[in-house]
Length: 142
Image (cartoon, rainbow, N blue to C red; front, side):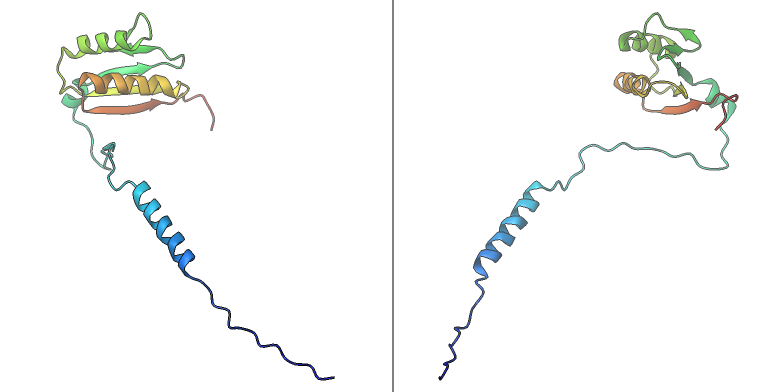
């Protein structure tokens, strides 16, 4: 018996579909990518070795956020926790001076939303220098 070897035709890979898919993916990613950051929060970090002068600390107005989510402006409790009440109290405490420094002092157990609301109210009123501080209870162990 004589076996004949079959001739295999050269199999070519068709690269056309692969190139089409790669180009479509490239177009998709180019169209879905944002090249401009629309909103950024500018944060000025404190520097070591700089002590605040006493005149600057006297001119600050403090918004205290209690553990229960209540607010105190300038050491006075507010009637309720609504943003409108906080805005009114803040405007009265600063006398409408938008250049005044605002310090938000939050209790360590305060709800995050209360702190964000205080920041939002101060930002909407036009205050641009807002400091954030946390209050730690010394009796708690870590």
